[in-house]
Length: 182
Image (cartoon, rainbow, N blue to C red; front, top):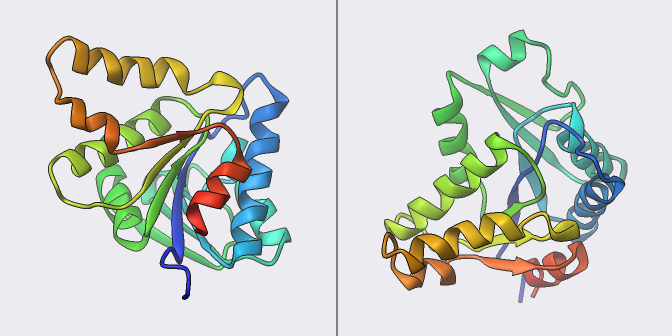
């Protein structure tokens, strides 16, 4: 049976962070997607973990599709070597488009934008707008405060316990790839 996951949106930092483990994970993710024949969908940046991710996928012969708002193209942060580059009118349409073309979502370490993308895709899951897999890779413990925050919303009565079933926390890129290709 063919793999049902043909494309994965990866949310990650436009900066590299303080640990070399973050860039190693981004490179392994890009390479793993390429080797599995899964299209990488991402925010089209050339900097930070986003650039590492895309460059690794491209170097391994993978297909990479970027989605970027027009104002970031004007800031010259768009990766110029992608298989496809879609320019949107803003951040909301960028996230919507990434959602539409992805069969699953993976969160790697990143900043406010990465957290925003992850929260929005979780919110859409809670609203029953999709049932696509949401995988959070806990590179070097990066995801623990985020996951603790989600658990706190449940503990304080602001969210149903079922929200904790909407995502999976995985400890490594190899575990993420095993989940995507099973």
